[in-house]
Image (tube, rainbow, N blue to C red; front, side, top):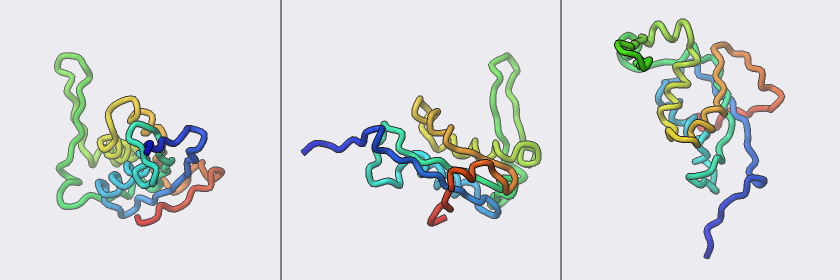
Length: 143
């Protein structure tokens, strides 16, 4: 028997919308990463981009459990000496709430060329409006 590998022309990508208001950040991010990767499909292939597009609305209303809202920090280095930067979750959710969800989902995707292509299929908006109504996104089932 031969292994079935789907062709690029056979793959039909769907659009899903997720309302983040009141959802726990990590659980929601893992579910979104699964859909972006394509693991929910029966023809999943690890080295191909079979995932669907995900639109997240109300990113500013995402929830964290426990005391993480006051403790959690995001750290990155600029590449220059002494360039270690820290941003608190409470500051980031006020200024750029989209980045909180983007960073959580990016951490759950592969960090290679495939992951960089998959993260482009994630669209995050702070409010309840989004410009992707023409794609007729469905609500993400089971979440």
